[in-house]
Image 1 (cartoon, rainbow, N blue to C red):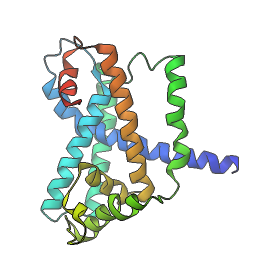
Image 2: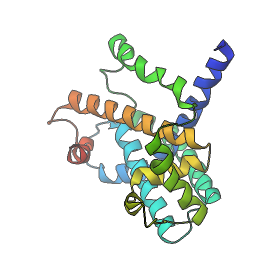
Image 3: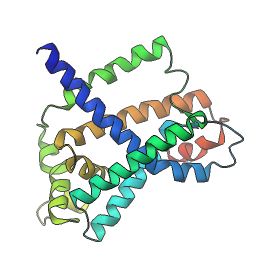
Length: 217
């Protein structure tokens, strides 16, 4: 593998995940800002904002699917508007947002996150796992083609509509199957950062984490 191929393999997923993170930031900030008005000046963790934004996008996508409006151009437009909103939020409210917990902003934290960054090399490879090709990506692709949820009588899994599946439709309509795979790895990174944030704050931490504690199993 040549250096230019490696650079493209890293740059493309990094760019896509940056856009996706901005979209989740734009979608999640209005909800988080409204619920954390009485946080006594504590900074709001970015991980809480993007996780909330992913939930908002999943909810909106579900609404589109239920009304048979789950089409690629509409999802692309929604992502673009949300990403622009995310840029505005980070520019306007930067001092109110904690980008990363302090434990990760250190040499040790950077070393621990290196394996996560290394996965960028794998994200542009085509998915090959059976479940991915027959369920996780196949169903969202059929939803996009039909404009809404589709059930298959001989596939019981098709009756279980997941938030992840809805989020995959955003990637499938934008960059393709590898983008959906990237969202799965992005969710893993969000979980790691959320755990670090909770560990640093403890159970007596700032108010913006209360909802996150309740949502953490």
